[in-house]
Length: 228
Image (cartoon, rainbow, N blue to C red):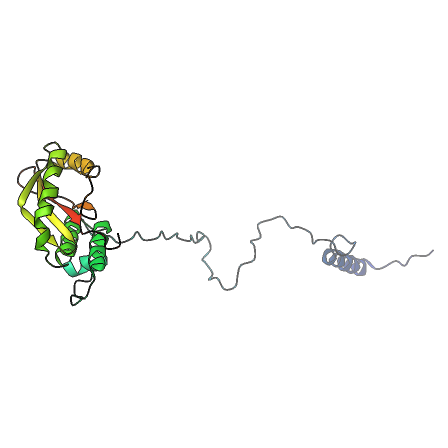
């Protein structure tokens, strides 16, 4: 077999052409992966991202923490209308509320969450007094409150002249000599035993500061549940 001898310049051009074909086809067997080039070449950039000057640091994505819920500041006092609305109490019903509805409003105020102890006490007492007067309960309410103080071991002084009764229940003001006495009395208050009570439950308002270290709060009895 005879081989043609090409001039040097033409042979170099043919060799370069063959090399280009091999690079485009991978490893020469077809369908193989393209050769990996090791070096300082940067990865392809998304054309939608703005260009940065040479040497600029990579942008950092900031993490935004969720905002904490806004709560009333300690000591904040809101209007009575707002407090009653938060407790689900509608004071302006034109006197059309049933005894069960009046009692339920007081229950909602007792179970409600407020910004301060003072607000909760205001809401509870307003829900009670807005239900309308019921003076015929004053006597038996006073007879109910008196033994409670005896059961608390002298930690509470009942002011019997402050007994007031309404359609939703009754209240009386109670004075405690200190915060410790109040906390101790509050724990015992929840476990007081009564034989066949006429009322529908009892409640204690948060305390308010008094003279010196003393605190005052209100005991309440709820009206009997109409459904029982």
